[in-house]
Length: 322
Image 1 (tube, rainbow, N blue to C red):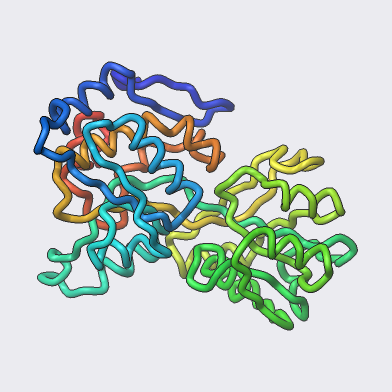
Image 2 (image 1 turned 135 degrees about the horizontal axis):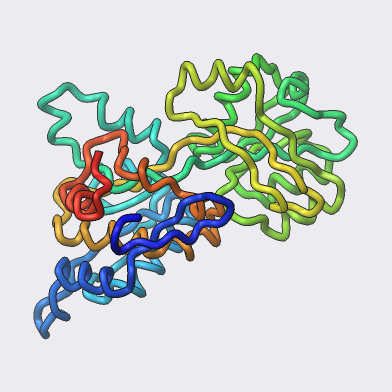
């Protein structure tokens, strides 16, 4: 076990956190003493895309890094916000981060404003179907009305990939902006199934649909194998037991890798502190993303784009560099 970390993950999963002393030292080294009058604290703007995980990250950074002025930057897409200079740090899916960074030729790519901070757990897709629908697998969605998240969201992207890989032909695919809208569509019968991201514990709206008889179906089989061959950032995952009432078994599904990214010219010492604080906050962040309890830290530096020097230095110090 590496010094400065402790094993706390249940069931054989791995979770590592910095000791309080190590974290305090990292913050002090990165940000120095509290700013004197007339010397404002460095501002770090965190894109609100990928809420509620990004919202909790804003809270954690604001609470634990008092020498930084941490602000929420309203954004529907962290990549665009960083590229346009309206955010310094954010969360996105690995496929989109990879595409945004590597689309440019070599010389231009080096000037990309995007840099990696950490690779997190995949964001899983949950498929909830209405009671009495006789839907038991993804292929049963042919001829049905299927609800996905907002266009260009992770839920929309992954849902469309699954539909295509399974050769499903829905009667209609609807974009839905909130879980409340999706759950209501299941309850009133205007949708037969909904895809939604599993990064939060269930809300009361979803619980209500489950109590009325809605149930989860798996994503598995040949469609997953085809999908993974053509899309390397899609992972085979599982929905943990007891996420919903009566759900006493693991449910196979798929997920997209999630990446924390930042602005290339963000101060190295600041990114070093942000990276360390991210790991210390994992137990609390797992309250909105259960899979973070089982984060495989050996994969964390495996960003699909070049790491920021501050993050790279942190991983070298923790002996996690690849």
